[in-house]
Every structure is written in structure tokens, then in C-alpha cells.
Length: 237
Image (tube, rainbow, N blue to C red):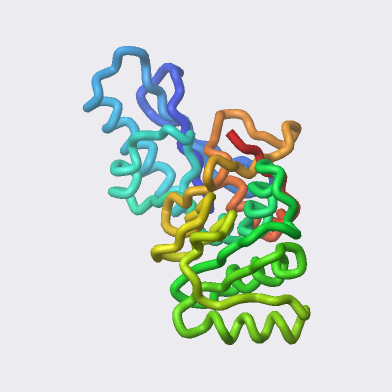
């Protein structure tokens, strides 16, 4: 069960809890009334009440607004954010091509580096998509880059390099910590991946009311199998 926690200006002292469908996802929403000029201590106590209500209703992961400041109160009640790392890594090839397009660099003249502590499914998929399109693809994975380069050569006939420090890369896609350098670096790991100014977006007609953080919501839809990450529109700031 997915929880949605919303701070409202409504009246009352208790959160209003209701089950609903959010773009097809079954969820439970807690609307927490926060009147104007309420003290910070009282606000936190009300948020805790909302968190407890979501936990009792069966929620374990929660969607909120992007600027939601009270995650400590949610975690105290066993609630956690929606993880977005897997989804962002599934966007890797699209992000690289979008950045090349933004900079008007033809893929056939571009150098891209993929790096990570191991060869994950997401890294391998990004390599499969990019190797037929870019001029130079480097796989920088300790002890495994050469094996992946050899496999891609056999499968696609594409020249893929192993190792390297990414200094010549137009784009570096990082699937884990490491010292990889590129003109544009996407750090696609951890609780807050860095998409280098890009953001995946829902079509206008599918955007829910309430200003929910779009990245976790899209991650849930992708997790449920309702979105193809390679077809998602990306916007840049």
C-alpha cells in the first residue's frame, strides 16, 4: 500500500484518511490540517498523527510534495520515501541522448562513459542501447569492463572500450560511486540521483492534483510495469 501525505489548510485536528486510486495505483491519503501561524512543534505532532494513520492503514512507502520537510516524523512511524535509483538508472541511455541533443552533438560524434562498481542489469541495458548509436562507448567497471566490451562487440559489432577515466567523454553515466569525469555527469545512484538538470515528466493530462513529487510517482508507475522508461519524455531546466 502506498501512502500519500498532504498538508492542508483545512479545519479540524485529525487527519482525514481515505483510500483512493492515483493514476491506477491503490493508495491511502492522509490530509493533515495545518492552520496558518501554527507553531512548529504542533505542526510536527500533527504530521506524526498523519504518519500513524497511514501506518495503521497499511502504508509503508509515502508520496509527498517535493519540498516536504518532515521525513523524520514519517520515519519514526515506519514510513519511508519511494526509492528512485532503479528508475533513474533505467533512464540512463535516454538521459545521455537527451543531453547530446541539448548540446547539439550528434551521437555518431559523441563519447559516452558508463561506470559503476559492477555490471548491473541497468548498466548493461544502457550499453546495449548506446553502443550502436554513439561514436565511442567506454565501460569503466573494475575487472569487468573488458568482458562487457568483448560481449558487445560479438553481439553488435560495436567498438566498445574498457577502463578509462572519462576525461574525453561528453557524457558520463555513473551507476555507483567512483571518480569518473565527463563534461556532463549523471550520478544515477543513491536516494537522490543527480540527473544534471533533467527531469522525467508525465503528460499534462495525467498529472495528479496536489503537487506530488513527480520522480517517486513515476518510479512507482515504472515499478508496476505501466511505464516504459525508454519512452518517457525528459525536460531540462
